[in-house]
Image 1: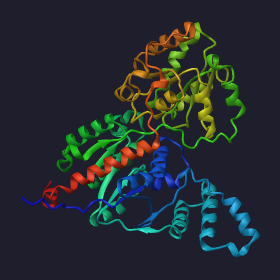
Image 2 (image 1 turned 135 degrees about the vertical axis):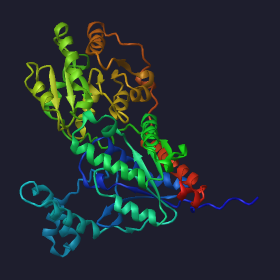
Image 3 (image 1 turned 90 degrees about the horizontal axis):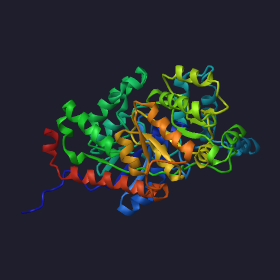
Image 4 (image 1 turned 180 degrees about the horizontal axis):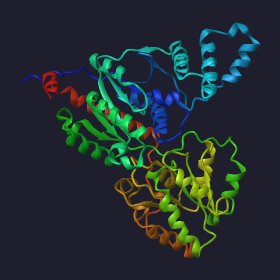
Length: 453
């Protein structure tokens, strides 16, 4: 019997969509994943015999981008460039002009610059550089970035018509599975984008087994018959390195003072956006109990201010221990999180729900004792290297902290230095292999069968 012909040609290019990260200056978990996967993708793709290209959406076209190690934290030295151009007018060209105008516009748009004008200047700037990429047969377009933040689906629809296999990376489904922790301004667009993603996607790659299982359950309950094939779902392990931490940047004096008492007397550290899902309320409730017996215990919260947290912020700012044994930093530079990890007494992570919980891995990387809420994703990521406390009972965490303060005792867990850490090359290798495996599986499905599904 002759082999069944494939309905798709072998994958020749993996196109990694990363528009949101390229245009933003954030440094949360998603941006770190995108930067690092893109940085490693060219070398990893060569190992698999495919070309990996990071691309961004500009207007109605895709453009290839060339990012160096720092990638989307693209601190383009536009001021320095302006000085060079001013010294030598012959260096001016349209590309430089639009870049400068765009950067200036971004900085003043909150005052009077219309967003539409900023977007137009930005698109003109991007369109003057970068090779145009036209996705077609033999390509897989992977939505690695925050695909719910931008209108990227018109390009995906066109690519799909050109025979491109569409992959979607799932970081979590929390706005639909835990809507009580989000504002409607997040829930509504995410739900709409998720519906669009389910319509266009051929396969999904999640960032954890927990997210993968949650997605499959959601898809099956929603009745998407086309997506019921388990081979369309996989997950990859994230790397752990704080990739853009620069030791050349200064750590502020107030941060040094908070973590300058010696490691045994330094604060317990919690890293994460200030929002209800992160459950800082339980943390404060637990420390209210701890401070009654151990008034010298310190707590430091690190993370940008999110949403639905006005009451929590007021409680922190008005607390009698604020800036004495209770600290909060919302705008740390790249170097300062590393400083906090290296000098913290222990790490606390009381989240109600997570897609992965990258700070847990980072804390273990720095050899910290880690206490986390007892939820499935933390069990998956932290395994037997973490101590787990009851999510509904602040006293459970308070008891652990009290034992550590009183005698230095900690629940029996494996040593952090035994924790097997993925570097970003291994993570990217895992990611690309899962994308290619899904594409090859789909290539064995006859086109008529796929359309009928």
